[in-house]
Amino acid sequence: MITTKSETTLLAGVIGNPINHSKSPLLHNFWLKNHAIKGYYVPVNVEPKNLSKAIEAFILLGFRGVNVTIPHKTTILSLVDTVTDRASVIGAANTLYFNSAGKVTADNTDGYGFIKNLTYFSDWKPDTGPAVVFGAGGAAKAVLHSLLAEGVSSVRLLNRTKIKAKMLAENFGNKVEVYDWYASDEALKGAALVVNTTSLGMRNQPELKPNLSNVMSNALITDLVYNPLETKFLESAKAQKLKTVDGLGMLIFQAEQGFTNWYGCKPEISDSLKNLLVQND
Ligand code: NAP
Image (cartoon, rainbow, N blue to C red; front, top):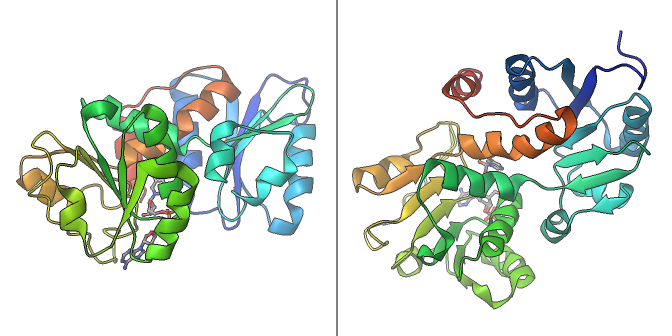
C-alpha cells in the first residue's frame, strides 16, 4: 500500500474537474513502465472548492507534485509558495513541484513543450524570421511567451475576436503586432513560422485555411491541434512542400520536465508512445 512518505514508491498525478479526458496518466505511466520506475501517476478529480485542501493532502501523502488542468490552471497561482517567471507571465500553471519541506512551486511547461516539439522535429531556428500565430486563447499565451523568450524578433497575431488578441499582445510589448482576422494574407507575407493555436481543425470543428503561398520557402507550419494528427491546415502546407510539425509532440514534451523532476529520470519520446496517444483518442 502507498500511504506514507517513508516508502520509496514515487507518486505524482493530475488534478482537474473533469479529469477523465486527460491523456497525462497514459503518458506518464507509459514512461514509468518503460523506465522501470517504481511509481504511480494518478488522475484525481478535484472540485474548485477543495483545491487548497487537496494540495495539502497530496503533500501529506508524499506526492512529488501534480499536473494541473482545467479549471485550476489560474486559481492555483494564488495558493502556492513560488510561481516561476514563465508561469507568472503566462498567468497559468500546469505543473506543481512539492519539495521535502512541503513548499509548492507552480510552473508552466507548455511553452517549453511547444518549442522543443519544433526543434526536435524540424530545423526551425528562432532567428529565421517573423512568426504568425493564429488564436489568442490559453495556449496562445504560452506560445507567444516561448517564441519571444527564444528570441523570435516579431510575432504577428490574429484572432477571430480581435480585442482578445489586443489584450494578449499588451503583455508582450511591441514585438507582437495584431492583425485583423481577415488580413491573414498580409500577415503571412514572408513568415518563417506559422502556428495554429485555435481549436479550428479539431475533429468536428471548422478548418483553418489560410493562404500559405507567400510564406518563406523554408517556413515551418505547425498546429497545436493533435486530433486529428494531420489537420487540413498541415495537409495543405505539405501539399505546398512546406515543412510541418504536428501538435502531439508538444503534448509529450510539456510533460517531460514534470516527469524528470518527480521521478528523477529524463523520459524519451518514441513512436510507440505517439501511437499509444493517437490510438486512445
Ligand atoms: P481556448 O483558450 O478556448 O482558445 C480557443 C481559441 O480558438 C481562441 O483563440 C478562439 O478565438 C479560437 N476559435 C475557436 N473557434 C473558432 C472559430 N470557429 N473561428 C475562429 N477562431 C476560433 O483554447 P486553448 O486552451 O488555447 O486551446 C486551443 C487549441 O490548442 C485546442 O485545440 C487545444 O486542444 C490545443 N492545445 C494543444 C496543446 C498541445 O499540447 N498540443 C496544448 C494546449 C492546447 P476567439 O477568441 O475568437 O473565441
